[in-house]
Image 1 (cartoon, rainbow, N blue to C red):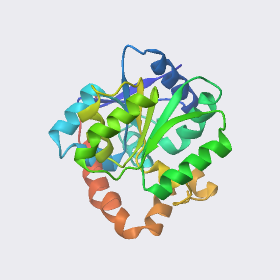
Image 2: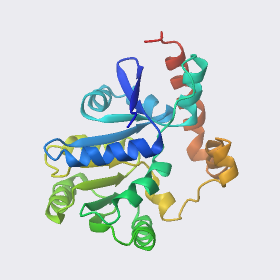
Image 3: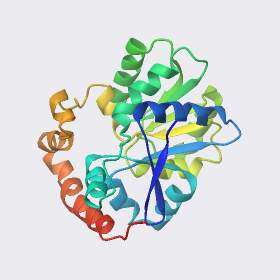
Image 4: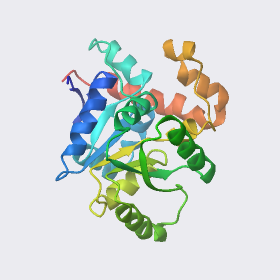
Length: 246
């Protein structure tokens, strides 16, 4: 497996071929004595983590941060580093689930609306019917419910927790409760359950091949995506491009 890292300031982002990283994730699951937390970093997430020092430090020190998105790829190309393989969760998910099918690993799903959760469960059962879903809960809960949800995750016997509550809400929940969670792998997946469930369709394949999925999403949800694709992206690109090569 060829897993590499790129340094942005004092943060190391992992990048690799999608299949190589999928295999790496299974190696992490085997290390039951050590819990692994995967966090995807794109330009938007980079912007928000830099506005929250505690979140930044947690991602740097307590997670496997992975390189994601055409924006970061463009930054690296402009810096003369090259065309790095990004690890977006939408493309990693089917590879991971296919490899998971037929194993004795159990997953717990946390996040999304009730409708998104129901659609995600249907999708998994229809496409990976040998995967064991040990439990699930939507992503809309109060702080006072966290202890009960953590207990439910632990009682389920799951060793993999898939969290789809959006960045940075999901990361804050995970870092707050990581010491209480008895799982080997925690994978933060942003809004993936909305896509997997079919509530939000992916861009057509030809746009994805052209790396224009961001434009498709912007046209679909201009108000929600405006800050992400303008202020956050511009700030992050400027911050990264002005840094000296490590």
